[in-house]
Image 1 (spheres, rainbow, N blue to C red):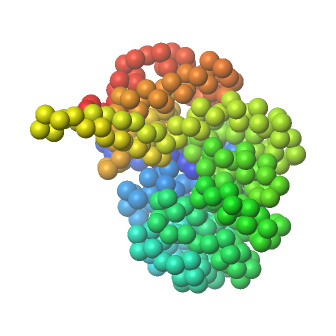
Image 2: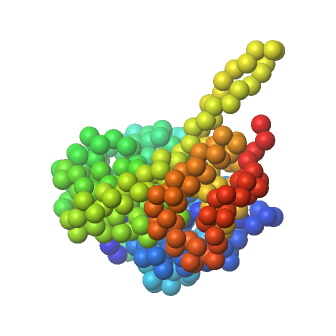
Image 3: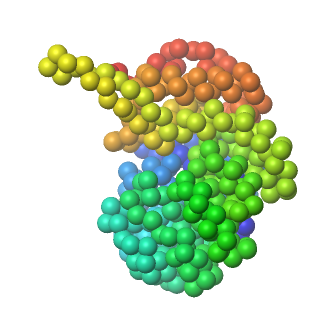
Length: 349
């Protein structure tokens, strides 16, 4: 399996009763495949893995693999802050036929870089030598971080660790990785907004992205990655510019005012993935559904920001969103201009 190009961190669509929308999930997978995606990652952060039961988690991995039917790669989300829990998830994925898994740095209990390498990643990788593992380095969510140097040692000790999902946002660290990791090792961007920079940099030489925004625009982001892999940065940059308004709203920060004892205070709300992407999908009419608690609807100010980003892209580069119309049978323009659609996605404050 080649870990390059655009991979989608899939959302998990839910029905009104809160159960998983399997028909919607299958439709979304079919859309991804039709648009030429390299691979799919179910049960990552975008898939709301923290709020799914272990049984649901394993079933989503299994069904996505079945829905894909060998038409693209599948990287099972098997991350946990417990090594034993990750092992159970990998075992379930392996039994379903999946031969690649994403493992994350251990959040909350916060092991050192040495412990992450020797007591977590190496333990799992050596237990399943026929499974390829992709470490996920995202200190902004985990509060810990396997170092670039321990990653290089891990890759040397475990040949079934051929790639990393790099979501530190630390270009200096990535340039170190580019120097010390094997030439055939795949650095994959975990941040849509800097994918172009990572892939175009001769010091990093990233080979692709595990993307949030490909839930909406798999074709455009796949093409951007192909251009970069083919040595056509100019053509890739043109696509990057068209997509930038969407990359800028994967996380949304807005202010609201609260009154306490007659005094007004400003509160900053940070709506993180997958709240903005699911809001956009719901607004356009794609299977997504509500978030599971504690995630929920955005405030009106937040919804306005993501709606405006979509309007900008639709006005300037409609071809980016046109595949949604063709596949899902919806009118992007009609939905973008229907106030009632977007008002229904707002949380009252």
